[in-house]
Length: 62
Image (cartoon, rainbow, N blue to C red; front, side, top):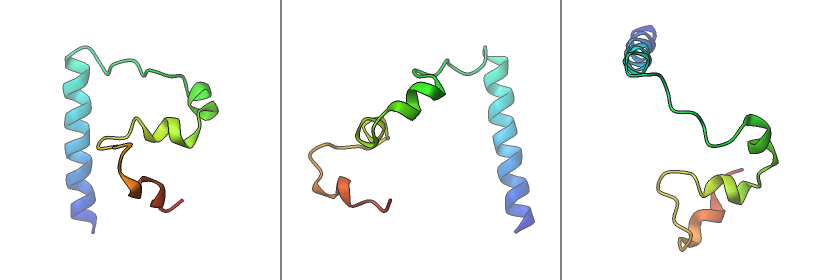
């Protein structure tokens, strides 16, 4: 639905403008090249809500 997309775009641009007024976005921890070298397990540890003890972590769709 076009209205929903427009609303999301307005929200996203507002967040971007807000970040730029406050000095921009923080630098990422890794370069894109470094991220491509990382294993799936290393990348998943950075996901919000990741819990190593959860037996369902490995059951996510590929």
